[in-house]
Length: 321
Image 1 (cartoon, rainbow, N blue to C red):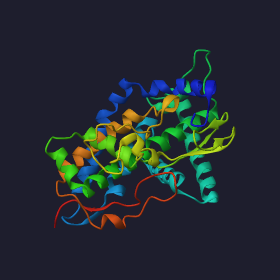
Image 2 (image 1 turned 90 degrees about the vertical axis):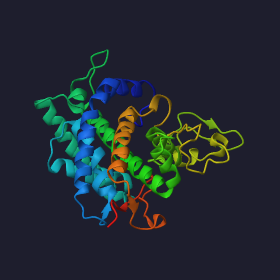
Image 3 (image 1 turned 90 degrees about the horizontal axis):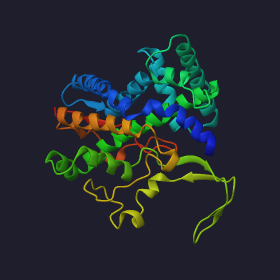
């Protein structure tokens, strides 16, 4: 669906759309709250003043557990393996490693599809297996696996970095955090400005021109040529966001961004991602009001690769020793 175009894209999107209705998304809220509370309780067990990797202990497992519940994957080794594979797909720059990982991921998801054919449930995988379009057509086996893979990548690593980047932005801009604490700004403001200023996906590979595209005062992109969409650049475009485009400001009036795509390819799961962040961030900062970095923010290592925008680790002290 990510690379499909025209009628083929409409067919695939129509088959998955019933899984992301407002009603189904709202129904996930109790699960998101339960998972968030359990992870924060685990974090709270750390010794006062100890250094904790907030990415590993919170930002990463939260959306992965949500995705696994959405897919109908029971707790166990499969969840851990899926999380490992998803991260490699988004960060690896080694062609051999990427190829091996893709095959392993498709095999895992293929097994999931087979199990849901035998024993369907009330989950996304079962819905996709049974869903038919107006002509009675279903997804092919490869389309099923590819669609699950797309939901996994789009719904996991992006939300990991949304949560992580929001924490990073607030801890490095304490004045902005204070605006939230004083009730002068909302967590929605934090989320949208984070998506604009530090999008979870920095560059989107690859789109391909279906016709010649003439850029005013620039080159012509020829039909068939690859296009790398630099989403991170669009969020800081002064022609769109004014002379302060390079500043993190949660009170910004125009916070329009492309972090969830645009037009017919706009992300179906964006309401779920926003919900996860809207639950996770206030819960974290309310439970740990003294939250601070355990290393200089400038020393944090980027995730790697050229697709995602985030950090490999987020070393913090949840409480002061």
